[in-house]
Image 1 (tube, rainbow, N blue to C red):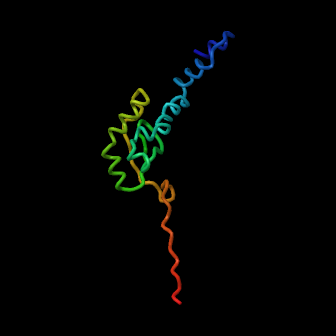
Image 2: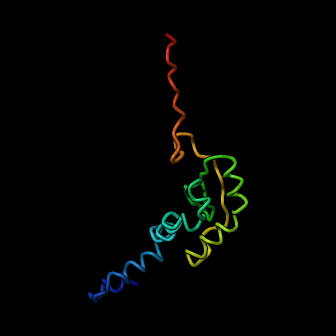
Image 3: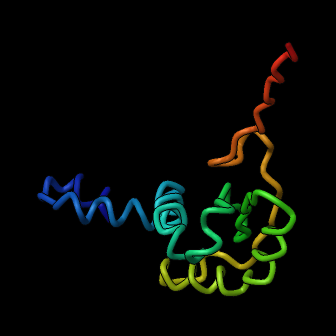
Length: 123
């Protein structure tokens, strides 16, 4: 569409070109998927979103990293709700399944390794 228009030297608004690119390229799919990261607090909900985060999406399967096995269980229980919210935000079936993995220790947001206390020497 936009290729034909450009060849004819007919002016086309940038919005139309971007919309066409969005529908026909991998970039468009990635832009659609970005809604998951942008709206994660709303999608996961107030209790879950701080304990897990979207990592990647491939073939309709969203990979979510969670901070512990306890939160993995809670995410698993809410799996279908998360999928439904994503698809509602995207206005189409963007995600069909969720795969949960534990975060690496150094990746856990907001958590620091416990600090060792120095013992005072007895006088």
